[in-house]
Length: 467
Figure 1 (cartoon, one colour):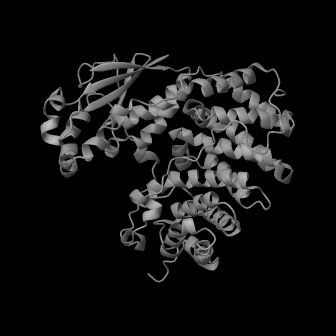
Figure 2: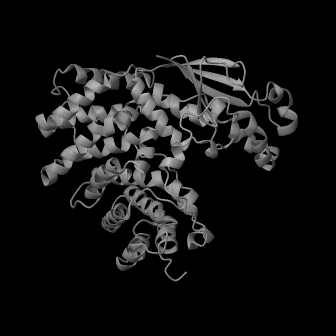
């Protein structure tokens, strides 16, 4: 199925004519974009909207039509992904500069074809806000353009998805954290921690020649090889057949051979089409089967099998659908959270596993951090927060060699606790009883490069009982 990007100019040529005089920089257009596939145009304004035939919206004729590529993802998987995006792309969430139609098309394009929309379109809001006039008139420009982009002549696909799924709004205006600055936490890069490399260091004693001759695995190997060579636009293997094979292999193959197969799957999941498929497919059946197997093996699970499973968990976050599932699907969230906590607290593991486990913790907690900052709500249950907090404190206290592991764990702890309600919450009592402040700040001497972060989280964020 072909995937096209329809590009419109909301200014109808005025930006090209007058931008130099008003902004001091020249811009060609005020871009609005839409994704077109299977004869339907998908765009974001008053929620996620559709139009058929393409090019018949209130925006008129497209300025340009760009072929992004093709997708072989099943229609039901695409529909599931769009429904998940509907929770983030509601009419109320629209912001001309920060959360607009081009953010939507970029997310959808990455899911469908493995690459986003052109940077000249994505970077335009930043270019405008970097000008004195753009920064000064941001609110007025946003208000003026909303009626243009949010016409409701095309009903939203999921008009109430956000309201139906989101927890009640809980704004804690009097929270001590709201009067404080947490520069290290708030400025930290929150891009997902991923692992693109094919062969994990120190586990290469197993060759890739013994993974068998199954057609699904050969197609997976070919896809990874092509993706490495061409970066994008590689034809997807049959992901349904591959998932079926892996679920069977989990129980039938010895750990060494299973590891070899999963290493390829881990590399393939760097493509958001693959990670998005397994995040959306049948309640994450393949991923949850794998995680459940690791849990059942317990102490008999080999280090390399645990490692590749943790890395698969991290690489799932290359698709934005995974972050949405962490917020709304308890079963999926619990399975990857339990794997992460068990790995963080497992004694005697090497740094390579600690890096993967801390990466998973970072991704999970980062997914719910923005939700807490915006409205005080949290998708994680108290038990989940307590389990993650306990595991992170254990990992922070035990870490002696890796500043990367320490940083990820401290940030994850900050994501969990920043703006968490003080009243009727056992987490703060647990933090006090476990001497969390001393545990975190005590790492400043061992890791001086992380002194600012450890002091900020350990002293300023966690130690708020007397404020």
